Amino acid sequence: MTLNLPTLWHDALEKVKTWARVNSPWLIHYNSGSCNGCDIEILATLTPRYDAERFGVKLQGSPRHADVLICTGPVTLQSKERLRRIYEQMPEPKFVVAVGSCAISGGVFDGCYNVVGHIDELLPVDMYIPGCPPRPEAILDGLVKLLRSLQDGQIERLETRPLAT
Amino acid sequence: MTQLIHLLFFPGGLFLLALGMGYEWLDRKLLARLQNRQGPRWFQPLADTVKLLSKEEIIPQGANPWLFIFLPVVALAGTLTAALYVPLFGLPPAHSLPGDLILTIYLLSLLTLGTGLAGANTPNRFSLVGATRTLTQLFAYEAPFLMALLGPAIVAGSWQISIINDFAGRNWLIVTQFVGFLVAVIGLMGKLELPPFDAPEAETEIVSGALTEYSGRGYALFRLAKNVELVVGLTLVASFYLGGLANPLAFILKTGALLLIIVGVQTLLTRLRLDQTVGLWWRYGALLVLAQWLMIVLAKII
Ligand code: SF4
Image (tube, rainbow over all chains, first blue to last red; front, side, top):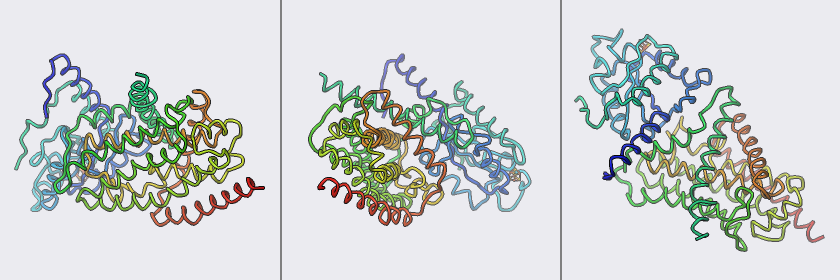
């Protein structure tokens, strides 16, 4: 459903929407074949010590409630379909964050017979967080940078981007 | 005209939604402080709501689309209507009729019923389990909660909330009916599915319970309904047991104190299994309130 509003109102509405999106990113976390090192760091990021709720970050269980898919690991052939299904179940607008060297390039699993390689080959990734595993500070920093680029309008709306097959 | 203002701005509609979000923030902030962290910023609930409203809404295959769309609306409408009958913000209720206590409690149950039906409407197995748990819990706490609120009604000799509020202003019923107060507070927590009674939306087992399939608008409306229910429930319990609500200052202080108790319990206890919840209510809660009832009735007769 699209509304045809005068440009002034439309712009104002877009501003409000962007503000809300930037201030309330809800995560869903999926392990697509990582060695679990990265996942532990992600969980550490959400503990009271780092307190991600300061930025409005909340971990959600259901893909339907999440805005940011945060995934780790070199996408094993088994988890490939599931990763894509989770992504497709999320409502627009949605963003993908790849955490760890494996998610970026395959890392130590590069060239294995049972992996796709990296998340990039499957989903459009918006933010890469390198490290093996990245520290919680790095993950938080990556998230904040994602939000900032969203605010500046550097990230294009995802509906226009194609999904790799 | 005044009717319209009552409905749209004060105490219904906008004011109530803002108050609901304020209390959600207070709840989350206090919880965060008790867990030794900074907690969300003051506009967090507003940002969450606007974001959810502007998200895509996915209607899952196999669900009845009309039910899927209208259940959140019914839930929110029920809780918003309930607010018209309670002394919100310490002012006299906007509407008052004999027996409105029962009406308010029924309206407050609409949210739980709506959640349960919404879960049963979607073909997702997590939603179904969540719906079963929601409705089971409804049967567990509803009767003791109702009985706990009827204690003050019996003493005041009326089923009208404003009269009970006046009566409670003269006598602090928490002193004479302590058991009723406890059961009412815990019943309120059960109603709102706050920890330790959050088995219906246990995210470690069943994703997020009955609302798993809701995205965007529907989820935002359910969240708002829950916030409003928090405010209305706090107002009810505070006005019945904590010496009535006669002015805005009393409202803020008393509901704030009550919220602090609730948050403390949330931090201290872990999630109960569903059978433990039901057992707690029927084995202890209901019996204790019943015993207190008998004593009240006996005291009245003598
Ligand atoms: S980047 Fe390192 S820690 Fe993370 S999944 Fe790969 S090997 Fe494990």
